[in-house]
Structure formats: structure tokens, C-alpha cells
Length: 278
Image 1 (cartoon, one colour):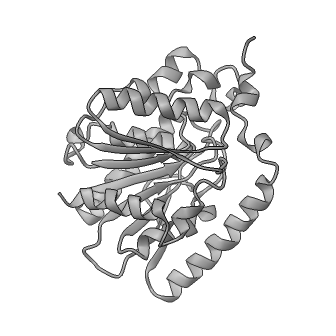
Image 2 (image 1 turned 60 degrees about the vertical axis):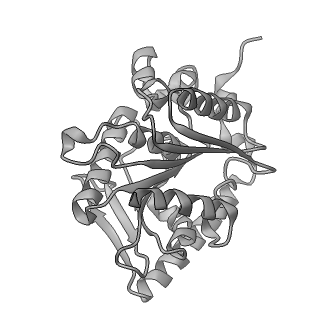
């Protein structure tokens, strides 16, 4: 029986509490921004590109020489912004890591390929400002984009080849082909060629670098399958991949531990940030 891809990729329909979860994200994110602003450790709406959504919110660790991480939000490349996700920087900043949370234009106003380019501009902006390599992590569409940043050849941009030596991709879609036959493709406008071109699964794997791939144990089967495939494919090509299923977690609460400075997820991401110092 043919798979119904619209259902297979519809996380919002699979998690009935989605509106309440996002409302809580908004409250937690606003409270965290307020706290960091009071402490003088936040900068908001730093423009790295010409459009309104191309901005970074920066949350600084107390140490000026702290490792640097970039968080990329989800929303299927067509929704959300950094403002719902500020609190997910809390775990890292409490452990001595400076975190940038980046925004991007959304489909259908731009293509997924253009969003990838915008995130490259965000990475290069941070490189020019801080002069240091960074760990990139993200959720859902942000997990896909984190992998894209890891697999980018930065040498043509005047930056180190391993500008992004490590990544942490949560619930990512690494092969976009399955999205062609979904109702969301009215926004994505993908065909076979453009889907493959924007799928990091098929890019030259960044051998020698480290990518953790995490997915909720209660997520839709396609997300679990794609995470397995990505870990196996890049792992066999020389990337130090690590696959993990978070027991009992669905697509929208799998990221919650990032806000907890003491969580195992935060601890692992801090370890990956340390790889940027080598």
C-alpha cells in the first residue's frame, strides 16, 4: 500500500497539544530574553542579511573566550522564528557557551535552497565577528540546515574548511524527496532535482567531523527512518555519527532538554562545542 506522505510528515497533526506547546515556548523564550537582557548578556535583531527575517539573537556566556554555537529553528522552512526558541539557548549559556539563534526567510517567498544560502551567510557573519569555529545545532528544518552547514565547503569564503566541525541535528529531514508528494509542497515547490540538490544526505559527507542525530522515540516513523539513514550513510563515509532515540519524546518536546543546563542532551552538546577549540 502506498504511503500517504502528507500524513507521514505532518507532525502537527500527530501531536494534538502542539498549540499549547508553542504557546509555552513563547512564554519561556520571552522570559529568558528578559533575564539575559537584564544581565547585559543579550543582543537582539542583529542583521546579517538584507531582509527582515535574516537576524540573529545572541546570548553570551560570561567568559569572553567561550565556545560559539549556532541554533537554527524549525517550522518546516515555512513557519516560526528565533523568538519562539530563545530559551533553548539556556542550557549552553549556563555551561559557558555563547549561543546565536538565527532566523531566515520562509517558503514560499524563498526556496529551501535559498534558505540554505541564508544560513551560510549567518555562519560567515559569526565567523567574521568572532573569528572562531562553531558548533551548529537545530531542530526539524533546523536539523536539516545544521547538517547542510557541516557539509559546506567554507574554503571559498575565506574561512577554515572545518568552520563547522560538529553538529547536533534533532528530528531533521535529510532527504527531501518524500516532501514532493505532500500538501506542503505548494510552499516548497520541490521537484526531484531540487529536492535532491537540497538534501544533505546526498552531499559529499564531511569526513572527520562529528554529527549527532537525535530523534524522539514517539516521532512519526519517517523521521525515525530518515535519522537512521542519515547516521548510517554519513557514518559509512567517514563522519563520526552518533544516533540516539529519546524515549517517549515526540517531535515537539524532544528539544525540551536543551533548556535544562543539567540535562544529558545539554551535556552532550557542550562536549560537541569543545570540538570547536581543537
